[in-house]
Image (cartoon, rainbow, N blue to C red; front, side, top):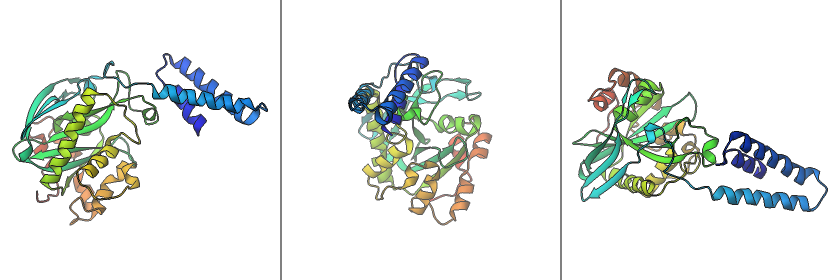
Length: 313
């Protein structure tokens, strides 16, 4: 396992040229296998272990950065200023999409009031059918449209998400703050992902505590870049971490990693309306048809919620 990890760390490193990375990774794997299992020289395992530790030290030294050729969807890091009850955002994404890759970028500023934050909605979006997807949240206000925050990788131009690569410092982390017509609409209408929207029975006080944690993290990332990591610094893992910090009572569950199953976990733990059977709730929570009908409309958020099961806020 150590040899496999170090081989992949070299292959996915910050060294220039794919051929160089491939050659060095292959040479490391061949040498260490030979040193540990084939060579009869006693010093060879020691040399191989020293080489492994050198790879670890080098990998640890690779720093995250804000200075890369970012894709336009993640080019702007949001920031937050809190002034009493007022929260001022910059870098709120609100793109106009024609296709998934043809869009007019538009970042804007937005103000919301903590005292008007009343609840929390939860999204699960599936790239393909299976137990893994993407999760994000929308904070609900009684005097303004919802505000979505999505914890994502920050790919450079020409890059796309790769699960294995994300374990080896290949992507920085970003908290995308945006309007639902953008963050939800691009998934339902242009990427053709299956998107489910669930009301959570979170109290207004708990939602505000969670919101403040998100705000602090947004500014931390704007000041100090971090790497995304599929297992330790990703969408669902961080949502659970922040829910714990804001007062959630609950233990670890394997569905925190297999996040395509997270809606069943939330249902079983009583964080959704359980008056409907889960299968019926899930069927009614698929919003693709409503989102496609509301494509880009000013009342997009209201229309995707029109036929959802409701809970008291």
